[in-house]
Amino acid sequence: MVVVDTNVLAYLLIEGDRTTDAQALYAKDSDWQSEAFVLVEFTNILTTYTRTSALTHEQGLKLLAEAETLLPLLPSVSHKEAYEVSVEFGISAYDARFIALAQQMKSKLVTEDAKLRKAAPAWAVSLSESLA
Image 1 (cartoon, helix red, strand yellow):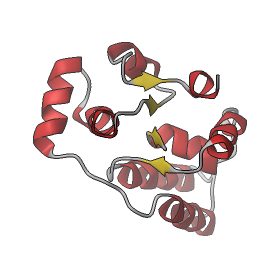
Image 2 (image 1 turned 90 degrees about the vertical axis):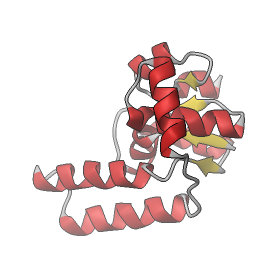
Image 3 (image 1 turned 60 degrees about the vertical axis):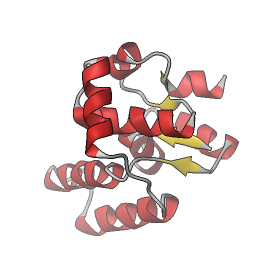
Image 4 (image 1 turned 120 degrees about the vertical axis):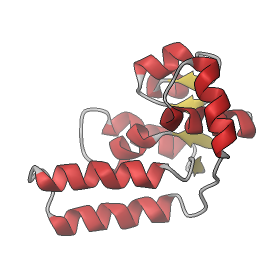
């Protein structure tokens, strides 16, 4: 089981410079978990790509459906937990949701967010670290 944040999901589903690493992580362990907020953030990425013509409307819908299939049962942390983790690590409440889930699942969060990894090094690792 691997806990991922939105950027890792996006790297897996939207072709880019880190897609190969995200695919390698998925091949290593396809049981990906994330906080329910991941689909809100991923939808925002897709709408941004669509508005800038990097994706068509149809491509955005297809990628959203793929994400929903990949992550069918999304756990959620309480707002209180997100708040407490946010205050503890000095991170946004959005990012705190992913760290709180990693803590609940006794797992590391895989993220390419360097500031988040620096703020919570005991709970967050990069794609390359997760593949080592």
